[in-house]
Amino acid sequence: AIKKLLNLKKKIRDVRGGQGAGKTVGILAWDIDYAQSNKKVIDVVSESYPHLEQGAIREFKNIMADRRYWKDNRWNESKHIYTFETGSTIQFQSYDKLGKAHGPRRDVLHLNEAVWLPWGVVSPLIARTKDVVWCEYNPVQEFWMHTEIAGKREDVESLKLTYLDNEGISESERTEIETHRNDKHWWRVYGEGELGETEGRILTG
Image 1 (cartoon, rainbow, N blue to C red):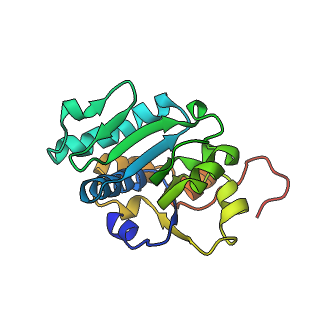
Image 2: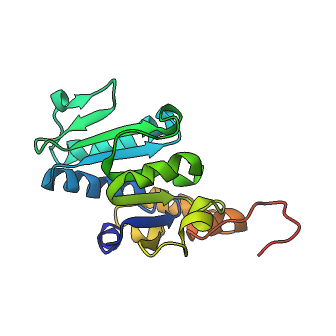
């Protein structure tokens, strides 16, 4: 998954995928490497702090500890911000705290589970991002990536990842994912990483 992520070069990087595909971990590893190689401001944004704490923040701390990078005195718990030796910062923020997302600019924007973030918040965030916008999500439904960005800008490239791209997935998680093969709607999104359809529609496809 990380090798495929590293091949993306345009500003807006649209990464959709299924369960266990390694999207969040792979992009966080990129964020960390970018922060250690340059002096950059990196914002990781998701729908809420509980969602961040149970997901991206936990994974960030695990990667940092596993690689022996983590230093307690560089983590500001109240602001959810880590400052690297290079002067780079990675800050975890929820959109409900950002208001209309006006204000400071950043070098990198990492939109975690972007499908749940409103376009009214995302649009000014992207406009105030200099280098890279990572947009990762389970494609449960069509959203602003499809209606506002893809096909309308030249600085966008897309990547689909599935659990088969994650060489680090545990055997138990792989088995659990594959038990859902007969659930057509679930498997399309979380198994194959394809755009889902709202159940109950009279017309589909």
